[in-house]
Image 1: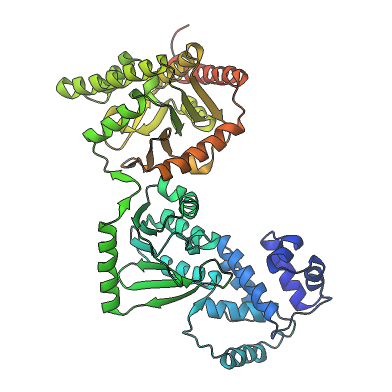
Image 2 (image 1 turned 120 degrees about the vertical axis):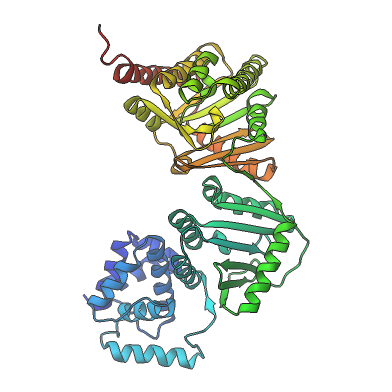
Length: 505
C-alpha cells in the first residue's frame, strides 16, 4: 500500500469517518475514495482535490480536538509542522497525503511554487470556514480567562456563526475560559434566520456566557459581514456573499485607531439594541421575587426543566424550618416566609383553576440526592445569593410533595429522564407558555446566573426544545404511575440512607 493510501486510511480511521461519509463530503463516488485508501488511485500534490481533502480533514480534526495527534503523525513521517498558522498546517497536510510527497523538500518546494504562481502570500486573506476556524481557535487560545469578545452580525442571514466548527470553537472556549460574549444582530425581518441563530447558541445562553441583543434595520447588503472584537488588540472581519456557495473570506486588523473606533461603534450599536435576555446579579432583588411570583402564581401554563428539585413542592412548615437552618430570624425570616407562602398559595390556586404544570427531572440527580442526602440548588429559592445545600429532611419533603401533587392534581405532570441532555446540566429553566423564559445556571458555589426574557422569539425556541423532549416520552397515565413509583423509591432510599440510619428499630 502506498504512503498516501496508508496516511489517508489512518486519518479516516482515527476520526471515525466512513468511506461513504468521506465521499459525500467531497461530492465524489464512494468507489473513488475506496481506490484512494487502497492505493489503486493516486492523489498528486498538484490536484485541486487534495486541497479539498486536506481542508475537510483539518476541519474534522479541529472539531474533534485531534490536531495535536495529526501533527505528531506528520512529524513521524519527517514533516516539520508546528501548526503555527493554518497555511503551514494545510501545506504539511497536503504533502503528507500526496502520492508524490515522498521527497519532502521537493514537495514543499512544489507547494511554494504553486502558491507563488497563484499570487498567494503568507499574509493572504483567509478563505473558507476551515481556515477562519483555525485562526479563531488560535486567537481564542491566547486570551486570558474571563476575557470579553464582542461580535456583530450585519444581518441575521450571516451564516459564519452557524458553521459547526466555528460554533464549536466559540462555545468550547466560552466554557474553558469563561469568556463573556456579547452578540449584536442587526435584524432585517427574517425570523427563520434569527431562529437558526438562537437555536445554534442556546447552550451558550443557558450557561449565561452569551448575551444576544438585536437592533432593527432594513439594510440591503452586497455581502454579509461578521465582526469579531477579540480582547484589546484584534478585530477579525469576515464577509460572505448572501445565499451563495462561495466561501467566506476574513482578515485580521491590529491597527490601533481602527480598533478604537470599532469598539466605540460597537458600544454605540449595543446601547441602541434590545437585549433578548435581562441578566440579574446574584443579589435576591425584588424583581427576581416578582418573576417567580409571575411564573407560579399568575394565570398561564408553566413548563419547567430542572437539574435539581422544586422547593415549591414542600410545605410552608418545612420551608420555614429550612430558613431557620440557614440562619434566618426576625424580619429576615418573616419576609422570606411570607413570600414563599404567597408563591405556594398562588401555585395551588393556579392548579385548582386548571393551569397545566409540566416538569422534567433528572433521574441521575434524584439518585445523587438519595446517595448524598442533600440537594444542590440556587439559593434564590430561599431568597439568598449563591448556591444552597438543602438537607435530607427537606429533600424528602419535596420528593413526597411531588408524589402528593401527582396523586391528587391531574393537571400537574412530571417526567423523569434517565438521560438528561447535557445542555440541561447544572441549570433550570421555566417557560411561561407564549409569555416568557427564565434561566438559572450555576457553575460553582458562588456563581449563579439569572436570566429572564419576554421576547417571544426566544421563548419560542425554548418551547420547541421542551416539547421535543416531552413528546419523546409519550406522556400517559402509565407514565404518571411510573413517575410516582420512581419518586417513592428515591424517597425510600433517601430515608434509609440518611434519615432512619442509626435510629433504633
